[in-house]
Length: 128
Image (tube, helix red, strand yellow):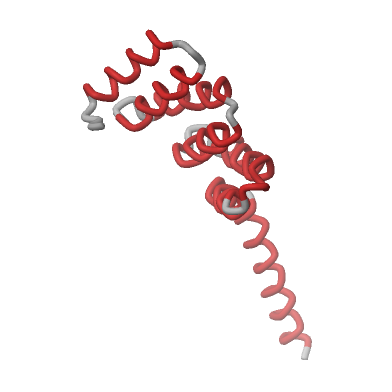
């Protein structure tokens, strides 16, 4: 009886530890953010989840991409631009990131900088 009880307690402890460890991963918080972002009224909560992912993994490309999308939906182009700059640092060869950065710059009225970002996107293979 004591052995069964000890095994059951050990199993419960392992499940709890696994759940806690999972909550500490960037992928976990990205999934939470994605679930929240599906309901457009939860964009701020989604952003918070993505930011937790970034705190855990500051170079997580997917988390930064999601942050950019939420900022863009919210019309926060300065914040979006900051996130795009991080994305271009993480993956400077990504044409879509440069295109998006150009879009953010254009929305901010910074046309010459936008044109340079669009040119970089085209250089990297972006096609309209």
